[in-house]
Length: 145
Image 1 (spheres, rainbow, N blue to C red):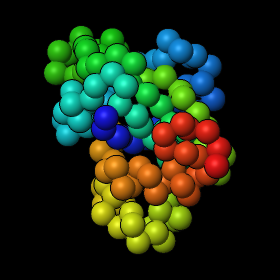
Image 2 (spheres, rainbow, N blue to C red):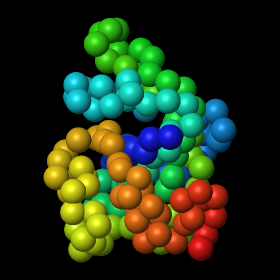
Image 3 (tube, one colour):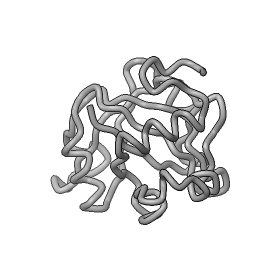
């Protein structure tokens, strides 16, 4: 299993919007960056990801799961752009802010801190476990700790 982070502006697509899609999930469309697209092409069903609110919240607020591998993005006729489908698994009992990530030495190399503009990015297993702990969620069961 691999781990990822998906950034969204809550005014455009929020955690609540994602949760409302239920088990069917939703396409993660609109990505127009080659590096982010390539990351989505690496994703497998069952991989996990953090759902990150950008703009004013700037916090990891939930955990999602890849439920459909990379396919053509339905929002464009341009065949260069792909997307994956994700479904909400669990909210973080305590959102993990960008400032909290910056203050955590174990997260110093996290892509979120090095390339803040990238909307889809990889997360290492160490980073995954640390952010889950900071957010009050067990990384295996996804229940509150």
